[in-house]
Length: 449
Image (tube, rainbow, N blue to C red):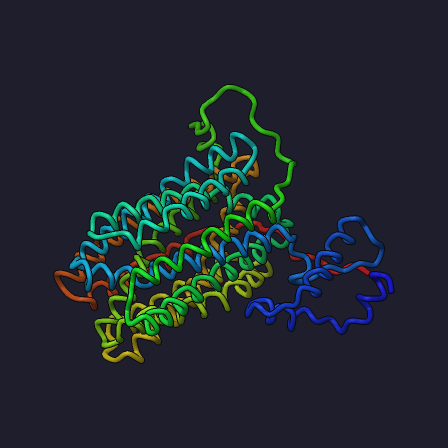
C-alpha cells in the first residue's frame, strides 16, 4: 500500500490523535507514520495532505520532549522548594519572593545575550544544549543545600542555564516551524513542556508520601530526568542550515539591530511585560495552598493541577491563534487571569484556592504560546533570537519586581493583597491588548488534493 492509499484508508483521525499525543500515549508506529507523511509532503508526493499534528516536524517533537524531561526534573524540586525554604530552612515569604524574583530575572536577562549570540553565529542548537547541560549539572546542588544562601546560589545557577537555552530554543522552533503552523508548533512544544511540569509535582508528591517527607531524597531523584533531556537534545534535534552565520566583525548585540525591530514588536513586549507583573512567581500559589490547610506532601498537587490545565489548553490555544487574531486569544487569557487572582485572593477554602489554580493554568495555556508566536510574527527572521532575548529581558526585570512586590505585600498585608495586585495588573494587560493594532499573521494551511 502506498502513501496515498494509506491516507485514503484512514478516516481523518487528526482530532483523536491530538488527544492521544497530549496524554502521552501515541504509539511509536503512529509517530513513524507522521514522519513519513511529513517527509513525503516535503518531497512533493502528489495528492499528499498534511494536517494537524502530522504536519509538525520531528525536531519540534524532540524539543518538546527535551522540555518535558527537564521540566519534570525542575518541577520535582521547585514544587517543594518554597515549603522547604519556609518549613526547613526558616525563610520568610519576602525571602522566597526575592529568591524566585532574582532567579527568574536572571534567566530572562541572560536570554538577551544567548538569543543575540544565536543570531550572530547563525546556529542555535549549541547554545540550547549548553543551557540545558548547565541546568542538569547544577541539579545536585539542591539536595546538598544546608542554608537559604545555598539555595539562592543553586537557584541562580540553574536559572542561568535556563536563560542560556531559552531564546535560542524559541528561535530554533521558529526556524523549524512552517510559517502557517507557528502557533501550533509553539503550542505543542509548550504542551509537552507542561506535561513534565505537572508530572514533576505529581512524582514529588508521591515520593514525599513514600519517604515520610524526605525533601533531599526527592531532590536527588530529580537529577535523573535532567540528564535524559540533554541526551534527547544532542541526538534527536536537527538544526536547519538555512541561515548563514554572520562573518563580519561586529558586536553580537547592536543598537542598529534593536532599532530594526518594528513598533508592532515593541507593543508585544509591553503587553508581555504587563502580563509578567500580573503573573508573579508560582511559589506563591504553593504558599497559598499551605496557608489554606493543604498538607506538605500534597502541596505539589497545586502545580499538578495547574499544569494539567496548562498542558491541555496550550496546543489547542496555539492552533486557535493560527486561525484568528492572536490578540483575541490573549485577551481571553487576561480575563481568565483576573478571575483566577480574585479567587485566590478571596478564597477561604482549599476548593476555592484550587479553582483559582485551575484558572491560572488556563490563562497560561491561552497566553504563552500566543505571545511567542506574536514575537515571531513581528520580528525579522535574522533577528529572531535577539527579539526573544529582548522580550525576555523585559519580562525578567518585571519578574524580579513583581516577585519582590508580591512577597512584600504578602508579609505586610497578607495573601489577599498579593493576588488583588495581580488582578489589577491583569486588567491593565487587557486594556493594553485593546490598544494594539491588528497585525498580519500567516494564513492557516489549505488542504490540497
